[in-house]
Image (cartoon, rainbow, N blue to C red; front, side):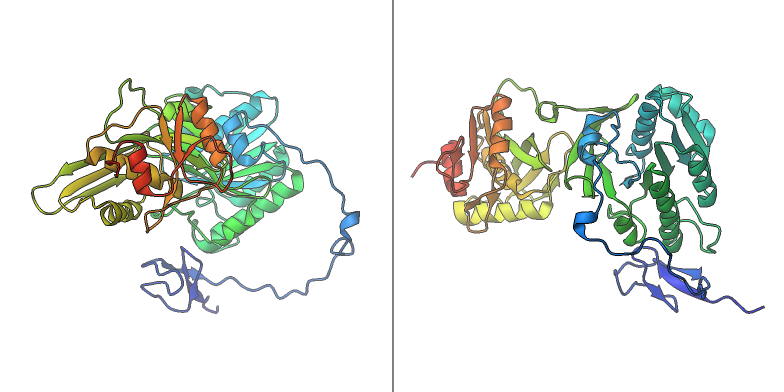
Length: 451
């Protein structure tokens, strides 16, 4: 019997090598190449089908109205573009214990209560464990079917037999295809298992959700082709010490990308937060130095968050920079801008910056609120509670425009903020106070002396 040939495959990017390498030449990760058996190539001649495969003019393509199924959560429907699409395949990933299985099990329970059969397949937990979670969430129903299986062919047979309106496979890294000799979770197993289930879901019209693991960097584990295969890629984000959870869409063939749904995790599962701005803002009666409200955008949704800063003297000569909720490199850049253009010295002071509520902000419009919060704490001058700010800060000290300024201001005024500070958008009529430089913004709030 001939010895089967092996190859080494990177579990992060799918790079293949004839020998083991300590570092993947393609993605640069260490110790990710795993030995796998080479699968035999199919040498059969493929004959074209008699039907299909013919190009059609765009005028002859049948256009059917897109049908959607509500998940029972308006926040999740928003992220999906209006609800689940029959025959679509989405993958939901996130950190361990963040609430992925809980959210999808709750959605399956909602669909079952609508008298629609749903299937939840678990490959990492036993039926008894799922039963305890169903009791805790209060979603027990005769239309909710649970299967403990990792064999993809058995999962596909169950989906074809039951024909559920929604199916969940938790997780795709635990599933395996018996035809492949590689272990579950490998690049080839994840790719082929997802492709096998995708073909079945498309054929019978089941909305399929795959649960995916993430790497230590926070990206979806497995081959990159997995993200190209599915219709939607969703991430469940949140800090372990906070109850706030965000569902973010980075890819969606049936709706906008970048949309965000806001949830709160408690002992009863995930509940929607329809008004996250009020939930994120603190209920202080008096203004405190070092805090200001920022008007940011998460997808197409404006949010108001509280930015906190603390500037304290450091007698040891090694000032600390502790940042939570934003990129520390961005804060270091803002400190350099303040020192250069406002002559505010921070080299002998500790600087702490925090986004209250456990939210992580990545958009540049958070620059101006952070800079103003730092100035407020540095000079111990409180900012009025009815002030909100937004704007990107350039290296020369100018405040650059940001998109969707009107939506930010409307959200701020809806919550009772009478004064909004932001950059000009090039139009004549505006509902907020425009500032062009960080010095002008600081003087308008009384943080800097007028010259």
